[in-house]
Amino acid sequence: MSSLDVRIVKLEPMRVAGVWAFGESPETEAHEKLRAWAGPKGLLADPKKHRIFGFNNPNPSAGSPKYGYEVWITASRDVEPEGDVRIGGFPGGLYAVTRCDVPAGEAGNVIPATWQKLASWRKDNHHKRGTHQWLEETIPAALPGIDFVLDLYHPIAE
Image (cartoon, rainbow, N blue to C red; front, side, top):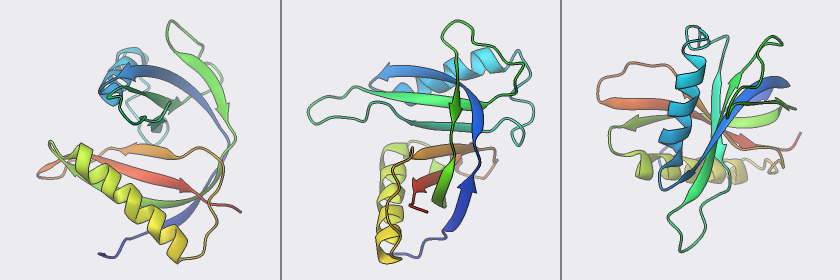
């Protein structure tokens, strides 16, 4: 197994605005919904101020090509629910985090493989699995041959 660059991160509680999609490729649909809502509000202009996180909800199940995906953007107190956009709170937690560069057309291979490597890293380094939400943070990056970049957040117990 290749080495994995992992850092331990404590996410603080966050107020988030979220959207959800269900289907055979719900990540794309959920991100499109979020961009359509957040873009005109200027929330996508500063990715450090308004971070974007996603996760399966519900997870894929054996025999079905359909599953759900939820996407959150961090939101200030003045952001209100609207249409399909819900407002909620995330309590935070401790995470093992690694970067995942995704080449075009390789998301279905690279992301699950990196999650598996991160889970193995957690076990090999004797961290107990946390019970809080697993997350994928969208990282703004323009890299040659890379379609998009994620930071994968594997929950670990404190």
